[in-house]
Image (cartoon, rainbow, N blue to C red; front, side, top):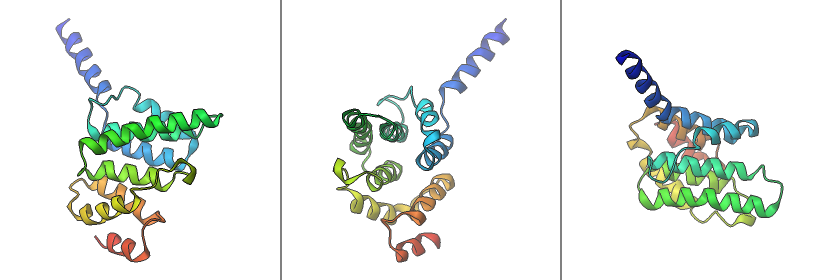
Length: 165
């Protein structure tokens, strides 16, 4: 009986713990494939502003991606604003976290001009370029590198510098 209780506890902890590498990959897939947005959002559905700050930013990104699927313009905007509030909260709490800056850059670069959410592109881009060499996680480094190499926000020279690091 004790073994069963321990097994249930271990399994429940594993279910409640979200692997950041899984989240990163799900984000990349959802950003490239609209059919994967719902799964990405469900992965982060239990995340609150009390959780790991990178997960909070990814939750915001998931909500902004969900906004694309809304039918009414007002609903799209409201959902987008909700998602952005999570991302901006994460930036406020951890302004020097490269991952949250990366998430905001990705959203701002891919947001229609009408939403007026593009003011930090240059700031975040420069932050990523400056901090890229200091990323310890190879998964995060590759994730950001892949984004930079396909991004229109970065020049060919900047992409070359990143590809050589």
